[in-house]
Image (cartoon, rainbow, N blue to C red; front, side, top):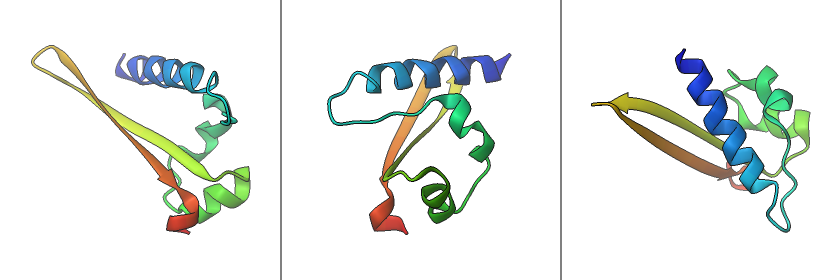
Length: 77
């Protein structure tokens, strides 16, 4: 059940970001094969991207807590 919440959050963020001028956003399905990838340079090479947006969520005391991170790959690779 909890994976559904994560996918809904991701789809919502992707939908919002895709309307931003100057950003080219790829779908969750495109990145799902890299879900467990730990090496950012491999992600950059595979997808040809400059940024990775990732996040986590938890449920505490019936509240949804969402954290997100945007990483510029030039500074990390």
